Structures are given as structure tokens and as C-alpha cells.
Length: 197
Length: 197
Image 1 (cartoon, rainbow over the protein chains, first blue to last red):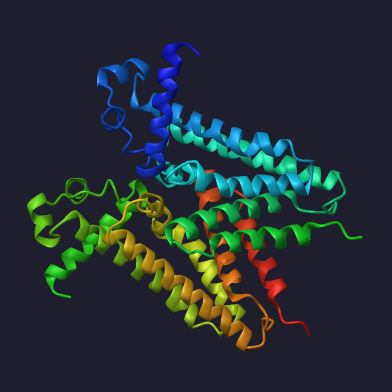
Image 2 (cartoon, rainbow over the protein chains, first blue to last red):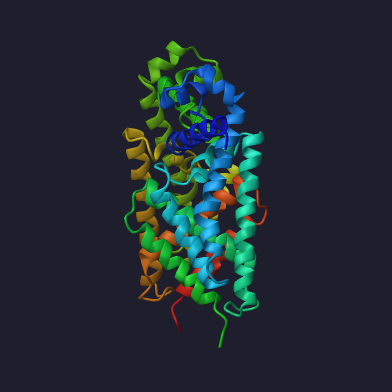
């Protein structure tokens, strides 16, 4: 990376942390200037508009998901081990990486009624994740670990339900049992999906 | 209701629709003045502060949930019929009532990192809903429809997972199968919870 790219990346990381806590709407060139100590004109040199800044923050969130969840999980054997890694790492990421939890949930409620490039890109990222989950589930069938007639689409919806519920009840309602509940739900899904002997 | 209370209630209803679409953060005395055509000073006479306004919007959302979901479901027989009514009416409410979907999800991501009276009240409402779901689940056990060793706490978490996932994948990602997936997930939970003959 050039020095300019380094700086831009450092700003985007700061912006991502801000969004994770306060949401995308409050991410303005002004609030980012306050958080980074940079001048507004300096920030404008890197991001021509609030929209450009939003898109780069979402791109950074996508990259972190790939680095922290997808890539290490793809090193696990295909099948149940890989699925388990994806679910556990997804839940871990929200506790370890971003102070405000999953940015995709944090901004979803903001963007679901606001058409535009940021919403389109967020939807694209979520569909990409769902396809990755569907492929990983199909592999568990192909490996003979899951039964051949498993409804892959339904299984992926329910994987999403685990993480959505964990995020909501764990973070918002502050239920200390949410992680245990999420894990138990996943283990139940695995048990029901197992191929019969 | 007195005329003053009528007016206040009409304003709160307008505010709730606004919040459902744009979020709690953008609900200001100014944006509400624009939406209702009232003067800022007229609105200030009803709501002394933005915080008061936020709390009254959450109270209205709670009242609607009771009117549209809880009360009609309590007319159903205890057990599976009542639980089914709660789940179906919860999903229906988001399609029929508020343009922006479930206000509790809409504002959860906004409030989860922002301590204060609005967050406290939102958490209280969600806990109240979870207790109501736990009581309704326990009734299905007491009626002999669900097996006696059912993990009620886990069942309630998974009920929440259905609605969280439906809201996220149906509304944000725009998946047309989300409702079918949500229903299938619920039917699977019911089947597994049934008392053995």
C-alpha cells in the first residue's frame, strides 16, 4: 500500500468502529473528523462524499468477515467441522472485533427502508454470505455427513436465525444465556441434519 | 380522552410511523413538525424533550403489540393454538401495521450501545414479551401438548430466532421465501416439542 492508501485504510477502520456503535447515519465527515483528529478537508480528499465513505466502510466490514470468519473456516475439513467453525467464529467476531457488534445487523435496520448504493451493497454482501453458507451445507451432504434430502435453503435460513437471535437477545436484551442458547440451537440443527446410519 | 390527549396520541402515532422507517435517532421535534404540519412550539407543549417523545413512541409500539398480537392470541385456547397465533400475528403485524416493519428491531440496533431511559424501556418491553412467550410455552406443557421435559428457555430463544430471521432476511435481504422458511422453522419446533404418545 502507498502512504495515501495506508492513511485511507486507517480512516476507514476508525469509521467502521464508529458505525458499529452509532450507526451509519451518524457517520458524517464531521463526526469522523472529530474521531480521527483530521481536518474535514483532509477527509474530503480521501472520500468525495458521505456515500463513498459508507460504501468503503461496508467493504471493510466485508473484508473483516472474510479474514476472521470465512478464510480460517475454509482451512477446516469440509462438512460439519467447517460449518461449526463458521458459526463459532461469527459469534466470536462480535465479541472480539467490533465494540458495537455485527455491523451488518447494526446498519440493516437503518438501511432497509432507504434505497441507494449502500443498501444495495449491503444486500449483495448478505446474499454472498448466504451462498457461502449454502455451499458449505451442500458439502456436508456431499461428504455424507448430512442426509441427502436435507432442505439446504431452510438450513441456511435457520443458521441465520441463530446469529440474528444471538445478536438481538445477547446484545440488546443483555441475556447472559444467549450464547448457550445459540450453541444449543446449532447442535440441535446438526443432530437433525445428520445422515442416518 | 380529552382533546389534548387525542392530539397527543395522534402525534405519537405519526411519530411511530416515522421511527419505523427512519429510526429513533432521526425522530426530532423538527422532523415531527415537518411530518405533522404542527409548529415546534406546539409539539414542545406535548413533549417536553426528545427523550419524552422517544419513550412515548416505544409505549405506543408496546400498546400495538398488545392489541394486535397478545390480546387476540389470548382468546385462543391455551397451548399450541395460542403459540401459533402469537407467531403468525407477529409476522403479520410487520406486513400490515407499520410501513417500516417491527419497531423493536428497527430501534434495537440504534439503542444497543446507547445507555439511557429509551434503551432501558426497550429492554423492559422485550423481557416482558419473552416472559409472555415463556408462560404460553409452559401452558402447552401443562395442557399435555408439549412434552414435560421441554427446555422452555431454549424454546423461547428459538421463537425469537424465527422472528429475528424473518425480519432480517425478509425485509433487508428481500428474500421472498423468508415467510415460508419462518413458518417451516416454527412447525419443526412444534413437531419436536410435541408430547410423545
